[in-house]
Image (cartoon, rainbow, N blue to C red; front, side, top):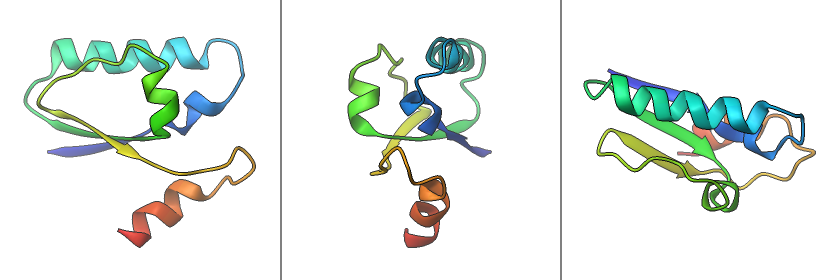
Length: 79
């Protein structure tokens, strides 16, 4: 199954949201190699964090300014 995750939360300065998302992806990488995960996030934010690299984790760059809440929806319909 292909599962999409909204990683735009990584742009948010709210305390704990970065750590939560990183641990979520790390946990999924360790526990579930069967499903494919599409992680939508800003490439710069992903480079600043130690995100796991695995064959079933696919990171997709979403160019979004902080003030644009519907960026993921627009990105999905564009592709």
